[in-house]
Image (cartoon, rainbow, N blue to C red; front, side):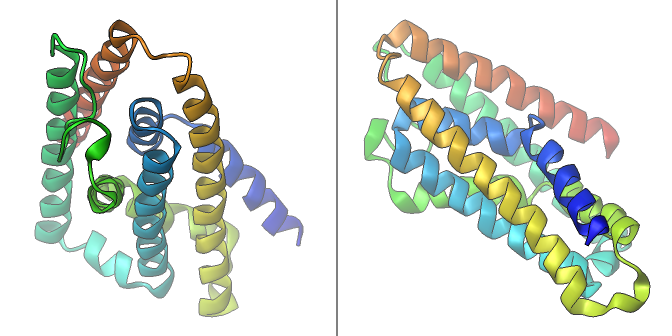
Length: 206
């Protein structure tokens, strides 16, 4: 029990660390409202669950040690983060102040698009799978079996999801006060630059 509580504390610290998932959710909430933010967070959570299950069942280790597959996922992540970053910068440069045009226009972007953006952002990030593979063995003994590994992996996902929901609520409330096009362009511009930074860091490690 003590080990599990230590893991929960560790997962909570990890959840609040900034990364592509939280940044994408923040932008979705500020420029698209609570519904878009929650749908983006749901897509991220579904992808995180898949990565956690892969790590717990051992399939993730096979994929991680298959260099062609791992590199393919890495470069897919680089490409997707680059696309998100450039799309955000494009929105920031629009003179009419319109926002969130990735996959649509303004708030009319479909629920499917929001889910897809969250899902792809997480599933193409090889660091998520690599992190699961590196961390879970530190807290779970090899003889504890699949159910325990799954419980730890899904705990990590659940805590991350809770943080994203809190982030959505805070950001969507703030969005009511951030109606000026100049402010929202600033959100888009900052998001674009940071996303491109994440893409560059991932590419350099490849």
